[in-house]
Every structure is written in C-alpha cells, then in structure tokens.
Amino acid sequence: MPELKWSPEQLIRCLAFVNGKGGVGKTSLVANLAGLYAGGGYKVLIVDLDPQGNVGNDLGYIGAGRSDDGKALVSAISTGHAIIPLTNVRPNLDVACGGEQLDELSDALEAGHGGGVTALAAALAQVAESYDLVLIDCPPGNKPLQRLGLAAARWLVIPTKSDDGSRLGLAKVARLFTEIREEVNPWIELLGVVLFGVGSTATRVQNSVRADLGQDLDNPGIVFISTIRHAEAAAYDARKRGQLMHELERDVATAPKWHERFKTGRKAETLAASAGTVAGDYQRLAEELIDRIVAAETVDLNDRVDVLEGQEVQA
Ligand SMILES: Nc1ncnc2c1ncn2[C@@H]1O[C@H](COP(=O)(O)OP(=O)(O)OP(=O)(O)O)[C@@H](O)[C@H]1O
Ligand SMILES: [Mg+2]
Image (cartoon, rainbow, N blue to C red; front, side):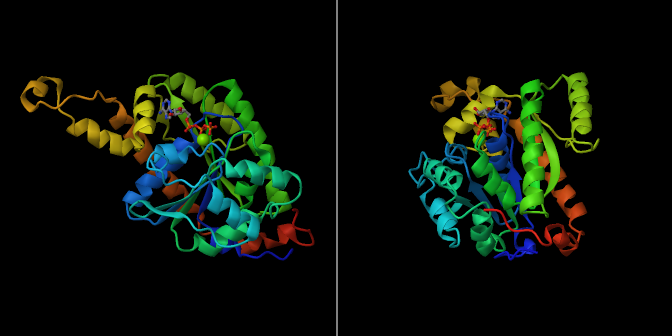
C-alpha cells in the first residue's frame, strides 16, 4: 500500500460531481443540494474546482464581492496546507471558492507540479471531518482538475442530460473514474447518475434513456429515480439573483400578485413560477442521495486497501 497522507475515512462523505460535458447541471446540483442539506442542519462544504467559479453565481457571493477567484483553494492544494473556506455563505454552508486561479493550477498539474493528483485529497482531509458532507464541483473538459476531484472523493455523482452528446461525456467520465480508481483512489464508487433538465412529460424518453445508461454502466438501477426538470426561466432568475431554487420559490410565493399591485404600490418583479416545482425536484433528489449513501456506508473501507498493494501513488 503506498503511503498516503490521509485515511479514506477522513474523506468518506466527499462527493465529486463530474461530467466531461458542459452545461449538464453539475454546478446547479452542487449548489442546490448543498443549500438544502445545510438548511436541514448538516454542516456542508462545497469545493469549487471550476475556473468558471459558477458556484459563486448560484450562491450570490460573487455578486457580493466575496470570491477570491480560487486563490485560497489553489494555495492549499499546492502547499498541502488545510483548505480555508469562505464561511457561512449560508448558515451551515462554507465554500472553497473556485475561479480563474484554478487555470494556473491546472497548467502546473499538467506540467507535473502543483502537488500531484492527490493534492486536493491531502488538503481536504485536514478539514473534511468538520463537515457532514463535502460536495466537489468539477469543471467540464479539464482532465487535471477532474482527476484532482475524483482522487479526493468517496462518491462520484454523474449529472447528464438525455441527448447523445451527454451520453458520450458520461463514457469519458467512466473511463477517468476507472483510471483514478486503479491508480490512487480505490475507495471511490459511483453513487448514481442524475438526469438533469428533463422535459416533465417525456416519460417514455426518460425511461429509454434510463435503460440505456443502466446498460452503458452495467448497473440497471444506477440512474436516480428523482430527476431535475427543465425550467429555463427559473434557472435564469435563480442564477441572476444568486439564489437557490428553494430560496427563489419563497420569493415567488411572497411576491405581490398582479391584482394586488395597485393596492400595495410595490413594483412587481416577475419571477418564474416554476421555481416551486424544480425546488421539489431538488428536495426529492437530496433525500434519495442520502438514502443511497446511508445504505452503502456499512462497507469497511479497509477491505479495499489491498487494491493498491505494491503500487506507487501516481503524481
Ligand atoms: N432546471 C433547469 N432547467 C433549465 N436550465 C437550467 C436548469 N438549471 C440550471 N439551468 C441552466 O443550465 C445551464 C447549465 O447549468 P450548470 O451551470 O448547472 O451546468 P454545469 O454542468 O455546471 O455547466 P459547466 O459545464 O459549464 O460547468 C446554466 O445556464 C443554468 O442556469
Ligand atoms: Mg459548472
């Protein structure tokens, strides 16, 4: 067994959200699920590994001028020190901000520097036990950063849309997952695939995609039952306002109705009424995801150590 600077138990509640394809809901899922878990009383950390830093748009801290563009995260990863996150982005929710600094880290990793593929795991292990859950948002199309996320995670969640391009992206993640599992992280497992941005009435299409993905991944039950439906207006409003879907839902519910506007004198902002249904989707998925983790947590991680017996940890 190669010498690791952390134990797999320290990272037992770390989930990486990965798909090589862009725009399949990675960031929306990470931000919304984290917000729901934090609201429910879990202590949650988001690690934003994306140079786009979109978690900060969804949670509103970029608009509030609180992002450091990934500086603290990159510093922790490249020096091996503990991650120092932005605290209380919401009650119980901290974030290691992403942003353009991660581009430099990616270049360094590609050149064989930056601490190597296990550098995030080492930095994260020092703080992960203070959290009930750690959700890692991985960038599309950036292999060095995706590998960092996968090397630090106990669980992989793959968001996907139902088109063929997304299915291809998923095949790429599956290959990367196998690579990382064989090289450095035998503890990582696929928790499930989330169908994102689905049409609410396309049940036949959904069932067929579910069957295809189950076949691709050799596991018929791997796609979560809960899906996140397509709701462009709600997604637009949420990101523009730096709100999560359940927060937008609250504002939609308390906004003055059109027929009350003369009386209240409040100028109306039209908000997407679909926020409520999408918020319900996230809530159901949040519950299903926890159920799967709880059901799987009986596994003894030390049973897997021999997978790496005699191998070198790859940088
Ligand atoms: N339920 C939804 N329906 C339709 N569009 C949505 C929904 N949720 C989010 N979106 C929008 O879809 C786009 C992609 O979502 P998101 O950023 O979560 O995907 P991503 O996989 O993280 O993208 P990237 O690969 O660029 O990081 C965003 O513009 C987002 O506002
Ligand atoms: Mg994203």
